[in-house]
Length: 71
Image (cartoon, rainbow, N blue to C red; front, top):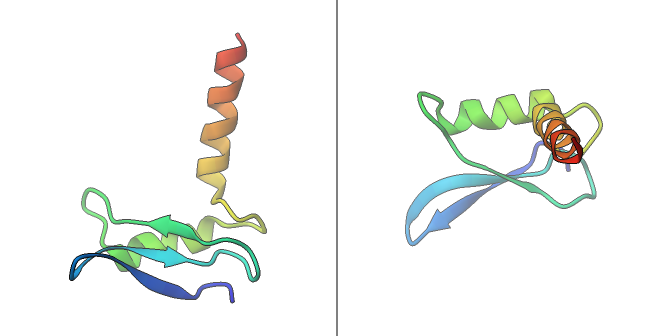
């Protein structure tokens, strides 16, 4: 279901979360970044998913890179 998570482990250390952004689709892998905790990163990812599996900032970045490659 959307919003469900599972820990992403390296040995016994949690290095991220496996997050379902939509029900019935493959999950995305979320890790924390500079000055962002893992729970905050998961909340931001879920907040940025507007009906698609991949969060909107990631989709936009991918679109811009593809456009730049064509030029």
